[in-house]
Length: 246
Image (cartoon, rainbow, N blue to C red; front, top):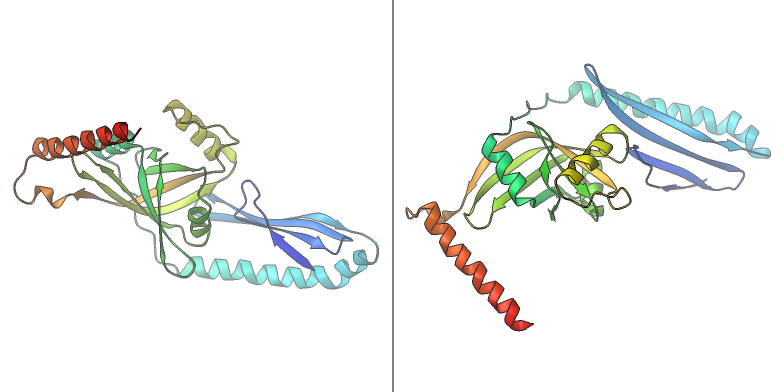
């Protein structure tokens, strides 16, 4: 058999058979939080015709069931031995203000080879007192990394006053369902272009650590007004240069 992976709304991973033609089907995994843990569900949808009806019944299905049972057992064992997650951090009023004002977060994830991936997300905003979110508009590498490793860091900084926050936590990927729909509504209400055909995934981040970021520009005793004046002047110089170039 020849399989290919594909994107299925609401699924963690999804695969479908492309050969042979007599055995066509899809199967996928999805997960949802429940009281005391997470429910992982596996679904198969397809059909076998001709000689493959008997091949599926007698050979493929029994082997598939044994492999699936082993996969689910491994998930259960890993969950049982995993260290307890950190408690969520409550975002302060100033943290919320900075995120809502700036709307831009620099998101760090881990690639499969262990190298870092850093990507700016211009839809970074506040979900609630313990969560942030951003939209996957053109973020294939970030989303791929988060499927394999949900650890994430988001830096949001005011470039004028040179202050901000570093948020660390774990990400959830939502391509459908209530979280996805609520994310679209929340983004639209804050002035973002939140058309469903534009946003593939809502990435919701449970914040487990939040620390201030303060520029060394303050090390010499400069006030916030002095630092802001310096960078406002720099921004004005760049703007004049852009206008001259036109």
